[in-house]
Image (tube, one colour):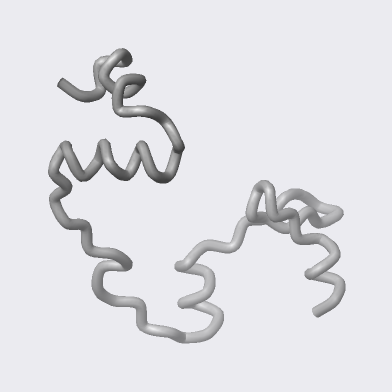
Length: 74
């Protein structure tokens, strides 16, 4: 296990092995662990423009004026 930990690169989400770079997919996990993967991973809800602007202001710390200047909000 520690050999895999040493070869894990968080930036690319992959293992760097002597033969090549390897990425483990959800399908690989299902096959290896015999897990049944069904349903949606995430359900999305419609987002109103005003809510999206509020999120940009809060999370990216930009002003509503900046968003409007770039044509993202009318």
